[in-house]
Image 1 (cartoon, rainbow, N blue to C red):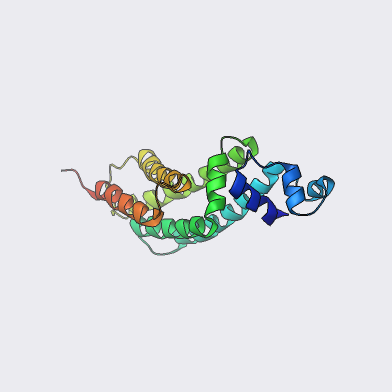
Image 2: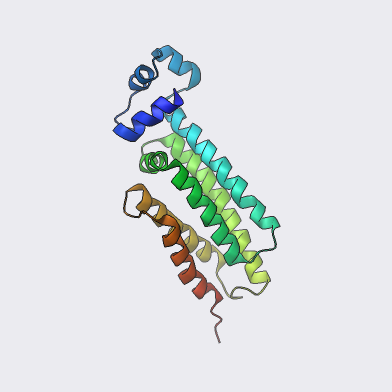
Length: 184
């Protein structure tokens, strides 16, 4: 049923797919659908939860490794891009649906808070190790990095960028040039 739902949402979009469509495609009754999922949003939340677990599993260990801030971000975005590309059209549906699904939007806000905390820690440690400017405004720097990824992800979701990893690595290079330029 999960696979049937995703197949339909990729082809027809989230708004164009109904619970009845999913049940028909999975060759089950509407009641059976509701034995597995509370709603159509629950299918989105299932994938979102899987992606979140993969992102956290790939990112949190970076804090334990003896890496510089830039290397942590590069590894993080390589892992993130691999996850995004592996799910491809499903990620496109999720991104395009965020504003249509309040439960998905709420779940995404929780993930964003957790990721922003990790970015803050990456940058704070970089400042403490004198890799980054001592006067770096961490909260603004976190927003800059997160914003760069957000635009990269949106560009991928709307088929405007076929190589999000290359795009993000170029953005990180520019960002870190500014983070490491020491003022005189």
